[in-house]
Length: 232
Image (cartoon, rainbow, N blue to C red; front, side, top):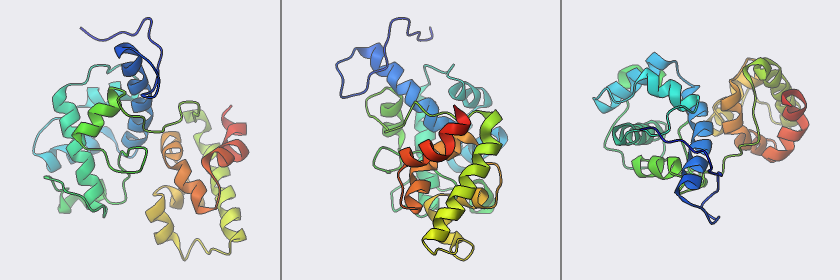
């Protein structure tokens, strides 16, 4: 039977809470990080990457959809195990020094090259145990649940943020066209933003702290100056 939280309040690990409070907190934060992660792929791409990397059809389209819309409240152990291992494999393939029993397929580099992965509050990639702990609300991923960029605002928000980044980089005498490879290593979506292309709202929010850091700001400043007037 699916889990319903009729009387629960989302409370983090530092608060006094019951099981339902913890689970609701976990599912709320998980929806944010999952939406940003999944937005990098079409459903067929993510399913294919999972199958080629893990050798198992463990990730399905209904799971991808229902995690994004909040309907998947009781994920199976197989799904959490598969996603944790896939997440570690993606991180390792993109240069993170870690141990992973699985390897992303070299013949399908476009599926994983320069993709972001799911991280804890300290920036470490989450494996199977971390995925479970995040969903169960046992750890706080440090995700803001107050910010949201709707699909209707993605074009305007992307253009405004791209313009802001170009101006701030110029103030620091950084030639972003020359340094784009290094900048992209810090925040994978920055190239599209700087070129005025649309970036999904979930990806902007997931990488906002890194984008802000590249111009010597924090995410609260950039949200308040650039994005909040558009999105609220």
